[in-house]
Image 1 (cartoon, protein in one colour):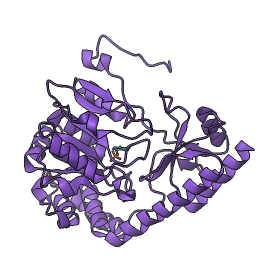
Image 2 (image 1 turned 135 degrees about the vertical axis):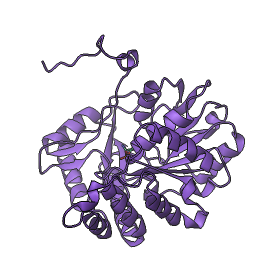
Image 3 (image 1 turned 30 degrees about the vertical axis):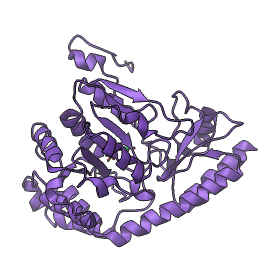
Image 4 (image 1 turned 90 degrees about the vertical axis):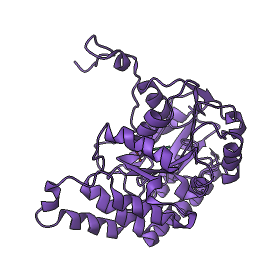
Length: 364
Ligand code: PMP
């Protein structure tokens, strides 16, 4: 039958209690305007592509061998990229996408007697990890403008995690507010998930050498167009990194394959490509914000590669459905306070143009 069981006597009690994450749709149909999972519309660095092809070579001989379990080349490339902040390779942890890095973070650093705090409207994987590892957690409501009020997190002593810019709102916290939180709260691990920071924010990696309780998590899925390669990393004090390494070595000592390591290193080294594509995405975002505003949408200020927008006269779910009928896929969340919004990934100018034309037609 197509109906899958909700629980089973053969499953562990933990799995019976677990509400799994539902990944954003990856449609099998071709020719869709796919603006639903915050991928980059531009290809990755040609140097990254060449490095991956070189790693495979003519006969794939290198693939007989296990990869470097600690991916030292990649850690050095990350450290070099943030050289201006004095980051060393011992301050870097790498994993198979930032989702896997985050899973290890929850297990290694966020399991305490006191509750973990995170925003009520945020990355929906956080409650799943908390459930998976039996971590007690409390959500903190966003303010009236859908922003994170960090003063509400000063009381935490069981850990803090939030994305910056936040997802799915796109709203950015200035670095000064994160610094103020770290100054006020030296007892909790503070994890800043910067999946989208390259599209308009300042990275908190600038602060890790001053605050040993700060861990910053990044991904190559968004600003480096490598969602399909699955590479993420974390930067923090060597003691935090050591905890992550212990969990990783007890879970999968080879999380990154040889091709991923080669491609990720070359992508990090190609700063020119990185700047070109992220600047193109930022320019398209500004254009899309202005086009949506002209159509009557209320658009939250975004520092990400997506915008979060609602139309006062139209239901969010209906708008998403009407777009889908026109082969344009955006993300809609059936969640309190945000069910009137659409989360729209920034595509090429052509894709954004198709979206705006379709919305014009739908709105009449
Ligand atoms: N953090 C946030 C806030 C995200 O939106 C995403 C993307 N879904 C991730 C982490 C995970 O990205 P990835 O596993 O592709 O690195």
